[in-house]
Structure formats: C-alpha cells, structure tokens
Image 1 (cartoon, rainbow, N blue to C red):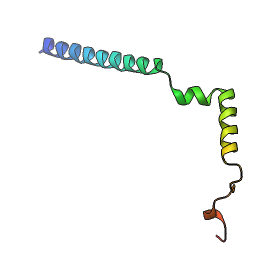
Image 2: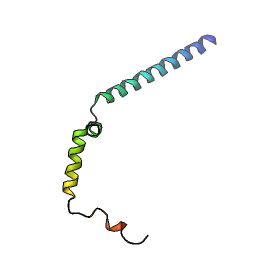
Image 3: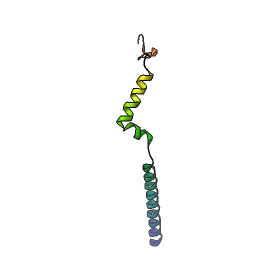
Length: 72
C-alpha cells in the first residue's frame, strides 16, 4: 500500500511540474511577440504625432456632443 501511495505522489508531482513548465513556456513565447499597443503608447514621439493628427482631423467640430447639451 505504501508503494502505491509513493507512486501516486510521484505521478502527481510530475504532472504538476509538467503543467508549470508548459505554462511558463507559453508565457515566454507571448512575451517575445511585439505588442503594437505597448509600442505606440510608450513612444512619446508617436503619441504626439497621433494626438496632432486627431486634433487636425477634429478641427472645426464641436468639442461637446449634442447628447450632453441641455438640461440634466
């Protein structure tokens, strides 16, 4: 009975180890890929350029939407 318990504990330990190793490998792979949101939003030059483009596109438009005008 003791050998069965040792076998089960050993199998469980191996299963947990494999699950942890596989999970870490997927995390490392996704960290290697480029995140375009992070790239743009941490680049001050790109942010300034995008902000200016948006301001230029919205020139002449109302800053407040018609839904927020009036009472309430």
